[in-house]
Image (cartoon, rainbow, N blue to C red; front, top):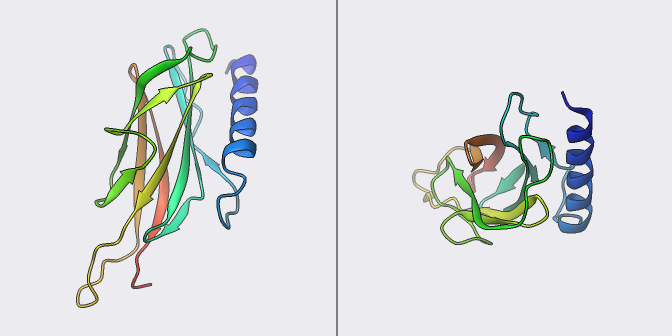
Length: 148
């Protein structure tokens, strides 16, 4: 593993979470996806918080580096986001696509439990995926149903 690349990722995540998500509710802190291996572009995703109730939000930050381990340049509409849960939305982006600024992109994930009291949904895991130029990374968020 390239130590320079790892150090850059750590710095990027540290500053992003200190600045962007320092006020995001009661959280035990961010969770970061596993560090990718191999050649090519690499993307690492972090979420804070990793447990949200219906109507709640989580900050999602993706850090992207080129094959040489350098943060990618600024690029509009570059990172595609998706969520495995129904009634999901990324509120700070249109069409689930994020802009890269300084090697990172930030979006806000929102989920609503639309089940009714007669047949409430169970709490579940949502897999958030971010992709860029063939690099893919995922992270899990626990969605707490309103029946809990």
